[in-house]
Length: 342
Image 1 (cartoon, rainbow, N blue to C red):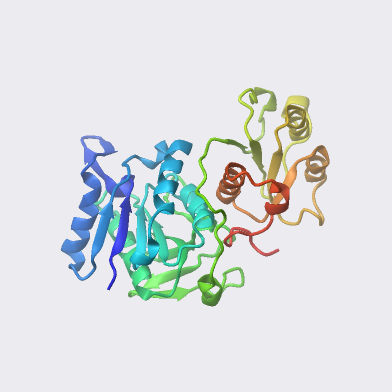
Image 2: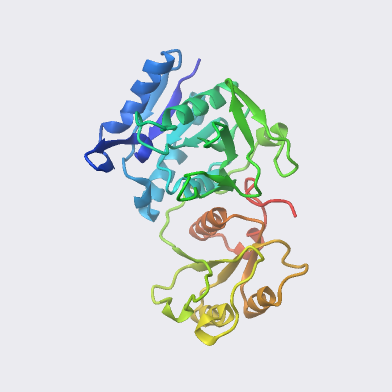
C-alpha cells in the first residue's frame, strides 16, 4: 500500500497555546501525526513534509506561490493521496485556488483544518484529519477536496472550488449553492446526489491541466465588496492592479447613484486607467437583471456567473498570472466545478 503524503503549513491545526496566545512553531504541526497514531494506530503510513509554518491569515501572494510550486512538483502517482493541513481563516481561498490549479491530479488532494488547537475541548482537527485519511482510502475520488466537520458532527466533503468562508461566530464553512458534495460516515464516502453536484464518474474523468507550468503571483487582483456608503473615490488605483473583482449583493447589484458612491463611475474610472473590472456573481448575465447591474455592464464591467467570491478571486488571479490572452472568453468556462448550472 502506498503512503499518504501530509503537507503541513501551520494554522490552528498545527498550533499550540502558550498563555493567552495561539501560534505556530517549527515542531507543533507534527503533533497532529503523533496524536493520530496514538488514537487510531499505525496502520496508515505517512510521509510528512513542512514547506513552511504560518497562521493562515498571514497568507499572501508570495506564500501562495511557494505552496503552489511545492504542490505542483509532487509526484502524485507515488502516493495514495495527499493531505494539506491548512489554517481555517483562508482555507476557502486556498481551496478554490488549488481546486482549479490542480484539478488534474490523479489522486485525492484533501485540504483540512481545525476550529481550535489540537487537544482543546471541542477541537475538530483530529476528526477532520481522520476524515481526510478515510476519504483517500476509499479510492473513489481524485482531484481536490476539502473536509471539515460541522457543529452537527457531520464530516462534510466539499468540492474545493465551492467552499465558502466560515462565519465568525460558529466557525461553520459553507458550500456555494448550499449543497456539500458529500459526507464521510463510518469510513465511507456518501455522495450528496443533489443536481448541482457532479457524479463520481465525472469526478474520475481525466482533467486537463489548466497550464503547462505553475504560475507566479506577481499580478494582483483587487477585490472589493459593496456596502451602504462604499466611497469609490477612496480606492487608490495607483498601483494599477491587473484587474478588479467587484463582488455584488446577492441580487447581482451594487449602488450606481451618488457620484463617489456609484459603481458605474468607478468602472468608468478603471476603464480610463486600463484596469478591467469583473463583477460577480451574476445568475444570468444575458437574461433579466436589475437596471443597476445593466448599467455596470454597459460601463464595461465583465460579468462572472454563478461563482463564489473565493473562486472568482482565485480564478482571476490564476488566469492573469498564467498570461491567458482571452481572459474574457475563459472567465465563464468552468475549470473544475466552480461554476454552478443556471
